[in-house]
Length: 322
Ligand code: AVJ
Image (cartoon, rainbow, N blue to C red; front, side, top):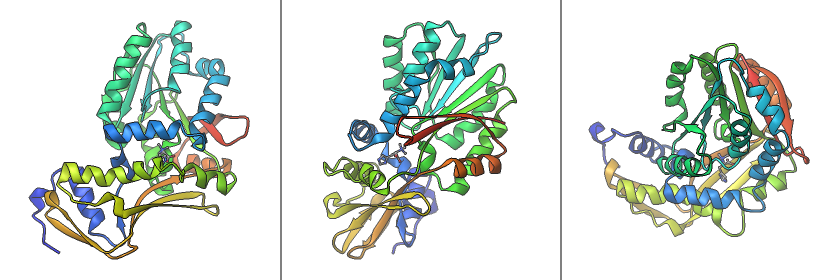
């Protein structure tokens, strides 16, 4: 393997691709799934009948709109509604509509890692809800946390929907929740979605569709390396592999090399060798239950105020306070 010039590793994508492809076993972060094409594929995933998460959370937000909205409300000073990983905002719109129609004094601040998603959401909201004040930002969760502290002029409600927390292993999730807590004042709220443990087959199916959408989504990280870092991955030579461990509630995605190959990534000055059936671990989608969420909350210094679930109890939204 070629030794690398550290000066070349100046962006986090580059750095992490270098780190991940020179490790054993190999890994790449799922946060790099989301570019224009990845956003579109994720929207296709959310529309798949087997990907129950979106429908369940939509049902929860639609059924309990008023209760949730009134918990958020501050009649005196209004509030800042900050959404991390806002995506296309489809679920959030239900709440936003209620808040606008009921004359809440608030600013909606969507933050997403995808520049494309943030732009689309902003323009869509200005059209659909012209009375809504939107102040969008592009950024990574951890990086954005710092900026949250600047919002201490009035009540903050931080939302993190879609079970996006599930991409973090427990220690990282605790780290993240603790930092959220540090950015919160006593009157602030944290409203989060956690996909629940259920029939393992239902979970496996959600990440293993026969139409190949999830596979294409997973492989999009390789496509991005090809385009943005001068890689020459033959994407079709990788197989999407999903497994779900019902003991710890972790769904894991891999890309498996179907033959031995050599891949070059110019931007990191590396030739990467794959043995046949060698893996790249790309994503975890953690599943939870009340016990795990209570434990995460306790470890992070948060308290669960209340929670909401859907008809099938597939999914839960928890409201936390510090
Ligand atoms: C957006 C992280 C919640 O893990 O369920 C969907 C992403 N990956 N299908 C999830 C995803 C494969 C999704 N999150």
